[in-house]
Length: 320
Image (cartoon, rainbow, N blue to C red; front, top):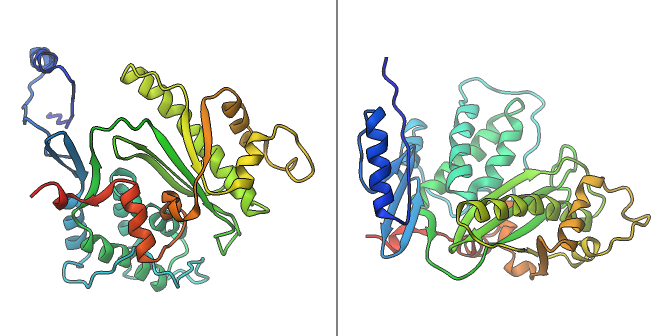
């Protein structure tokens, strides 16, 4: 019986890396492949203090698998004029919809936050899809073909960890629930992101943004602890950026009144985190809100502006 595992290990101390390899070889038969270039569908490039993570090889595999290598490309992953909803008659004949969405999910959660919102919406219809949903899923492949060289670009920077939080109010046509999107930036690129439907119906855009702040706060607390443990960092407070002044005031106001008393208690812990200086919330204009790409379909100029803010650019810009 043969067991094979792919693992990556890293250290700022080259001597420590060498000792670690020797230690592993004492008990295991290992093959050292040198500087990381490819692992589990991820492509790595390193040069002059810049690290790029992309999935060019994986995207090519998807294009081949679904016969899309010769397809025409599109500039954005979702058509602005399309609002998906459940199909009354699920047409599953000859449409490998679930297989394609599953393949796209790995991209959306690994290196491509730019398709996270589209894939999240597509995944809601795994039991209620038809040719309209299939066409929308194939559009993502056409977009990926155009942006196959895009990836996360990490650089040395003095900018501390910070995050964007945003929402799209009452986005779902089926249940009128809103969408949360958040993304955290470190070393010039996204390190954590999420795009998902909120669990309760928001009665206003302010309430939806407040719920998004709550979700972002949970992730900020986790990342703060992770950095302090792994990097011996001293991250005291994480800055969260929101484009809704009403939600910011709601987070800063400890008084409950009739407009807010119905909001689930679990969303109010953002106030405690704010009071304890675990997070600090700042206003940012909607024009500069990079998490927009995680909540809704955007026109191409805004879409690519968000990508640049999140550190998602063509690796050709840095590596030839």
